[in-house]
Length: 118
Image: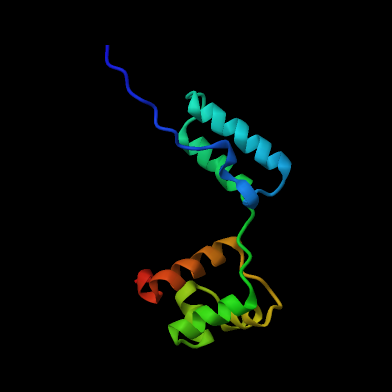
């Protein structure tokens, strides 16, 4: 009878200082333990991971820095990500903050340039 070693996928301390609260940390710890014993699957664990973490906080300076690095206008950046020039301007002035999804997209663009969207 062959045995397969279970690889540890998630540790209870995974959320660390990024956890929303102690309660989320406790929930995540319990979920990680359930994953270890096979009571939940990886897909369910990813849901716990996402709910446990605080969304990224991109500042106006970050948006400006990314656009400057790309050497594009507000309008070009806006068209590239499906936003308006006004939205980009509001993000850069700090009037509004990009949604969590927009922040993720901006981070990907920051790492790989706009060509990643082609």
